[in-house]
Image (cartoon, rainbow over all chains, first blue to last red):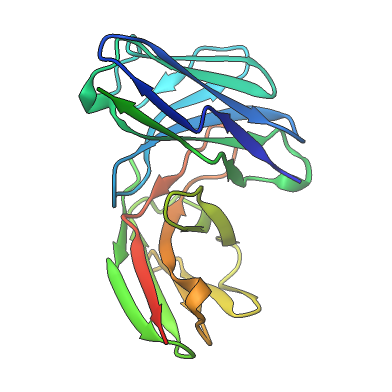
Length: 118
Length: 113
């Protein structure tokens, strides 16, 4: 149980285009989803916290108009990187936390999306 | 906000030896401390976690200890095996719906034959 999927796993795009990444909790309901960015050989940096049905909370320094987050249901959150530029190239990982019950506080991570902006 | 420091950044041990990774946190209110293992190019996987009402927790070859007074916690891996080679991240948070994890900088563990 507690499986999180992410799509796509890889994306290459031209500078200036927008990219949408989906994060789904497959076998549990997630009231809260988190979006992280990870550069090579570095730690996970939280970008934003996404609660179902409400606006996302962004970490300091993360542009909310550039990284659009939608959490429309208890099993789906999306991250859209708008007008992507080469410096946005990174590994984007989502995680989901269950809506109570036996899964507790644990965050379950998706497999990540590697974005390369040319 | 919370700040988590992790040491060492790299650790090389021989197969069968023990490995210890240490983390310190700054916010005394933090009460949930998970450890994640991340293999190259893959997702972080929870390997063990501990809450502040417990001082030690063990799961087979893996154990975590927590010292609330000193605000530090450690991961202990015994009888290391080559498949233990990965990057390990500690994290700290509050419990509750508003909580978010603050990660340490990671430790690259290499288990050599």
